[in-house]
Image 1 (cartoon, one colour):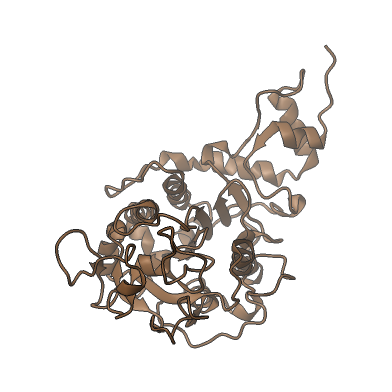
Image 2 (tube, rainbow, N blue to C red; image 1 turned 180 degrees about the vertical axis):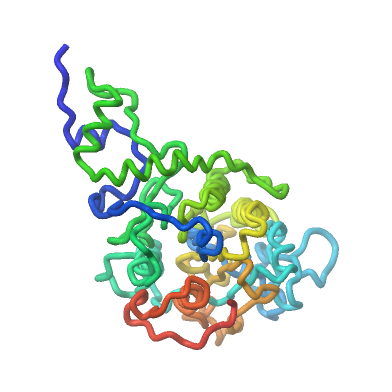
Length: 415
């Protein structure tokens, strides 16, 4: 039987490769070999960014039970105040704010002073479009659709420290490269560490073996791709099992965090990791202590708590930050859910974090305090938080190059 030539189009359709955003700028993503200083790697600052896609309800995550308007605005879905006693209630943080009980696994980190929340945070752009709001947050340029690269990629472009572009400097545990990491700086997207390879899959053209597909791929793209594959195989991150009694839930989000921990332990040069969790668009049947939102929050909180426990002393150099494109409406709707809103809440955890505190100015939930009469008003621009992380943790010299059109404000003091 005659052999079928391997074309670029055929290869991309039939070979499985979990590698860098090849659909965007293939030749530039793995340009140079990685020469790592093992001693320095143990003290390298690391940022783990987690996107809650779908607009998470910030006032159900970080509950303002002390606000006199809160309970009446949500007669079915408000979280019970810890001051009431009896049954499962909000977990008191400071006498005014509390955690949703589904996030109980995060409470010990808060009590230890290494988990902080920012309330009434988000984008100054007032769009209620998921697509636009996510794009603005990941580009780091609210309201500006002309920005093509992501804020995390621009951080890597402007950071003066790199000595060459390490192939594993930035990794997204994702099928596709997230908007945050798009750009000319090297970044990789993979769903599983063990799948970071070239392999033929079922249904390949007759006569084309894996070795032929591999050779065809090698001729299409730079050899550095294969250096990266070999490096990861040699490092073998999957040999690192959870430590310190950490138990990761079986859901894909938590398994992504497990693999991020493995890559950190493998010391292959990771600085930025990205993961996301969808399913926060709770228009109906949101629930209170139990229900749709509670289930998603438990998956979210238990995954982060497992990652924190697993990394143990390594967390001294790690900051975890969460984000969501916008919050939910303050009043519940007729379907027992919430509609698209404005400001929300985010979490920061890690050794450098000055936790045990809810940051941000609380705008209140009174009729005259709501944004457009229906939503939590914004008091903290998300870029204020991201900029503090980049300057104080990642040691970025000029955040103005990372966030176009943004003027840095006074630090929140979280780091």
